[in-house]
Amino acid sequence: MLQSAEQASLFLKSLANRDRLLLLCQLTEGEASVSDLEQRTGIGQPSLSQQLGVLRREGLIAPRRAGKQVFYRLADPRVEALLGQLYELFCRPQGPDEQPDETIGDVK
Image (tube, rainbow, N blue to C red; front, top):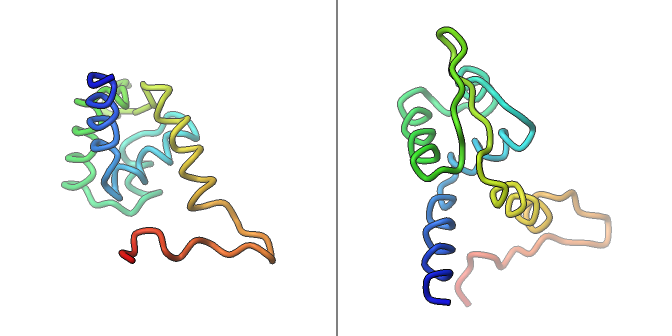
């Protein structure tokens, strides 16, 4: 159980960055080139390369080179499963009677 908790902690730590979450969300839609990711997310080059490097080292994404272009795809099925849950909790459009939970992240 301790080993599983350590693995989960490391996994969540690698996701705990706004830019990395944006990149992973884009990759749930399929493989994308670095230039596509830059355009879709608005993340500038130095930061984009740094965050892609973190995700690659953690084994969450995998690269594919085609000529001069590099394409990335999700490499860990747990990422898509977790992002689906995050979407439901934070991003899903709310109905007229539903209000998003404004207290998340607030200290009470």
